[in-house]
Amino acid sequence: MMTSYCYPVCSDTKSLPICVSGVGVRELDGIVRREDGYPYHQLFICSEGSGRVVTANKRCNVLSGDFVYIPAGVPHELVPTDTRWQLICVDLDGSSIGELLESVKLTKLRCEKLSDHETPARKILAVMNTVREGGNAVVSDCSALAYDLLMLLHKQINIESESSDGQKFAQLAPVIDYIEGNYQSDLSLDKLSAIIDVSPQYLCRLFKDCYAMRPFEYLAKRRTCQAKLMLLEDKYTVNDIAQIVGYNDCSYFCSVFKKHEGISPAEFRALNCISDN
Image (cartoon, rainbow, N blue to C red; front, side, top):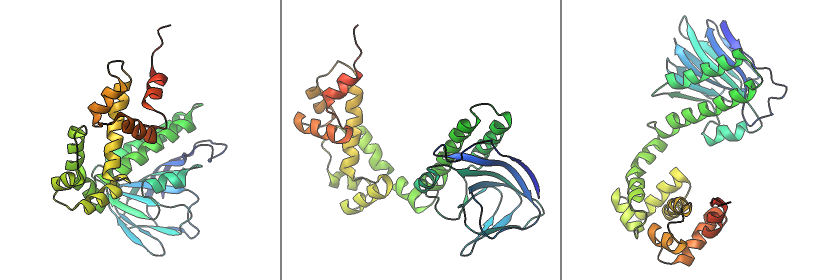
C-alpha cells in the first residue's frame, strides 16, 4: 500500500466541533482489514481504479468518482478489485462531529456516485496542502475546510442527487419560487398545492420533509426576512412594513415577527440603527 498522508499536530482532537485527524492519498494493492474499525470517521473519494468496502451487514462496490463514508469504530475491510485503487481520504473527529455528520445524513456506511467528484476531491487536497504548509492556524484552517467539504457533499448526495430527498426538493421548487414572488399576497394552502397538482396534505408533508416546517411557517419566515431588510431603513413605519409583506393586522405581524426573531420589529430596528453621534 502506497501512502501520501499528513497528520496535523493537535493537542486535542475534540478542541473544535470538527477536526481533521489525517488527510492524504492512499493507493491500495492489498486488503486492509480493520476488525475493530477505525478510530476516526473516514470520508474518501475514489480517484482511480476500483474496490470494495465490506462491513458486517453491507458491501459497497466503489468505482472512480464514488464517495464513501465509513463511521468511526465500524469493523470493515477495504478490498481492491483493480491493480491500482487510489483513494483521496480525510479522517474526521471533533466535539460535535457526530451531530454534524448526522445533519448531513451520514450515520452509517454510505457509498454514492457524485455528479462532480473533482470539487470535493480538490477540497480534501486543499486540506492536505494546509497541513503540509503548517502554521499557527493549521488546525482551525483545516476545520473550516472540512466543514466546507461536508456542505459540498451534502449538496450533492442529499439535495442535487436523484435520491428521494432530491426529488422532493425538485417537486417543491415551483411552490418555493411562487412564494418568493408572491409572499406579500394572500396565499392559501389550496392555491399553493395546485401549483404542483398535489393535495394540501401532501404539500404539507413535502414541506416537512424538505424544510422541517409547514408551508405557512415557511411563508411567515420569508415575510419576516423581507421585513428585517426593510426595518434596516427609516423609509417605512412598522405598520407600513406589515402591509407590504402581507399582513393587514400590524399587531399580528409584530407577534409573528417576535415569535421567529425573539424581539419585536421596533426592537430589531433599534438594535440595527446607525447613531448620528
